[in-house]
Length: 112
Image 1 (cartoon, rainbow, N blue to C red):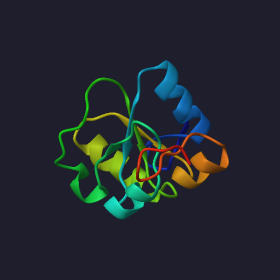
Image 2 (image 1 turned 60 degrees about the horizontal axis):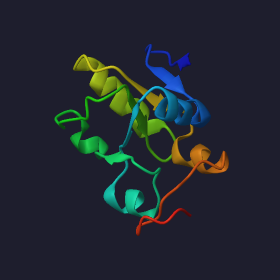
Image 3 (image 1 turned 30 degrees about the vertical axis):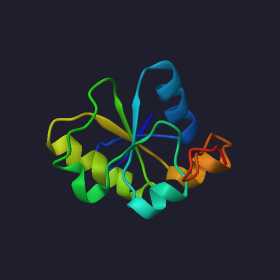
Image 4 (image 1 turned 120 degrees about the vertical axis):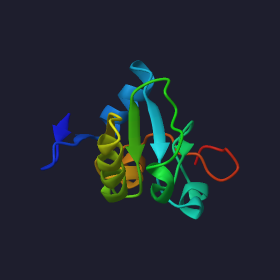
């Protein structure tokens, strides 16, 4: 795990996948609805960045935040930290997730 200059924890896509699989982490996709529909990680909860500060988030495990490239998820992690909610963001976002060959679901639930 790495940390950005503000102390926000960050993980790679493969580390995030391992957290989801082995540590019961919960993936939260903070992209806009059209981006989410175009392809997302299976089981991801969709909460756009614009709603993250006030959203009721899953509390069943550690939160892993993802967006397209890692910028919005880093912002979301900082907003959640201000609320006292621990979360990590995925460096490189869905772009790196897909490059690593991790599963991606399309709009109809099929793996693409």
